[in-house]
Image 1 (cartoon, rainbow, N blue to C red):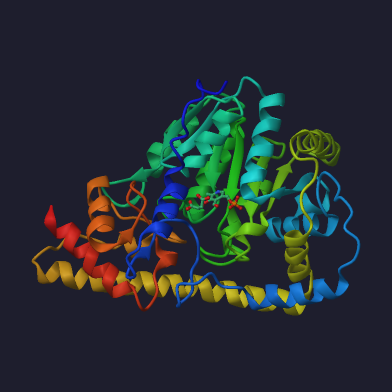
Image 2 (cartoon, helix red, strand yellow):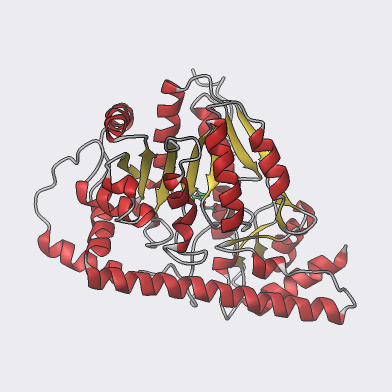
Amino acid sequence: MFQHIEPYAGDPILTLNEAFGRDPRTDKINLSIGIYFDDEGKLPVMAAVRAAEAQQLQAAGVRPYQPMEGAANYRQAVQHLLFGAEHEAVKSGRIATLQTIGGSGGLKVGADFLKRWFPDSAVWVSDPTWDNHRAMFEGAGFKVGTYPYYDAATGGLDFEAMLAAIEQLPARSIVLLHACCHNPSGVDLTHAQWARLIPVIARRGLIPYVDIAYQGFGDGIEEDAWAIRALAADRTAGTPISFFVASSFSKSFSLYGERCGALSVVCPDAAQAELALGQLRATIRRNYSSPPTHGGQLVARVLQTPALRAQWAAELDAMRVRIAALRQRLHSGLGERLRAAGDTRNIDYFITQRGMFSYTGLSATQVDRLREEHAVYLVRSGRMCAAGLNPNNVDAVAAALATVMLKD
Ligand code: PLP
Ligand code: LMR
């Protein structure tokens, strides 16, 4: 019956993470998957989340189904965090926000909705992007193309090429954008670049689809939402831009397995938001009916309890600052070793790239050598997760990188 089924090649990130788990070497270092580990190499449990959970257990009672769109307190908390409670788009009720199963669930629910109501549109993603973006949008039936983004020559952004490509897209093209902490490159647009891109999107009548899975890991919780707020405020075309935001709390609350995410659709007015919400509820009903309760309630409780929220914000700030310090340490450790060998190449991208990821520029062969000879795991594209560094492994990583980089 099933002989004709093609074997699944596996996901490049998750398969690698599984291989890391099976690796018997005790000095192995995981810089592959986008997960934040603490100084002991462990997943942190944030104190604010732990406190919220203790309160939650006290209050636990019956377990009804949630509505298709999720819990009202969670949806409101998400909106306020992304857009700011005082944003006109929030106050005028023109954003439809739904609780989803992780950021991934949000992306897919939005993709299915778009395929139903904009069947002739194509999707455009940055070159490169998170592998699952293409898989999800193709899975929803879309053609997926790329626009220029990462500039291998500088380890930065080729903004002019990106803008020129987006300027050529037909109206109603869906343009996937990373709000901050671009995965996999760590290369983001500056505010000035966003301010040039957004009017182009408005004039061309494009549909931005913003992915924000790392809010708080770039410049700060509010700062990282800048592009989303600017998109929602734009009036270049006379009317507001309609756009999608898939958001995730997996990293920012260290709640990976609880699958806490959301989809927000910013509409021209409240009546259209109601229409979008209705069809998104239908999309969810046909998929998994309704989201789970527990993790979302932890997030809502933290975000809506001032003391817990302040505690969470401080913890997340500390995570961001810590990654930046580890990036600095890696940069100087690697730089010293390269210079000692007479190699003066510029490796500043390790500190200019932001968030969890860096594109190291290493080839797949070099990544394989790092893994096989030094037990250091990166994704084969050369992506390194800086959130896997810690004071105990950063020197070993610098030494391994130097050895591999100096060999070619
Ligand atoms: N988008 C990007 C860019 C990601 O890196 C991730 C990572 O997990 C997601 C979306 C999905 O988030 P979640 O794990 O909450 O499904
Ligand atoms: C990553 O890119 O490593 C993370 O976003 C985890 C994942 O699901 O791929």
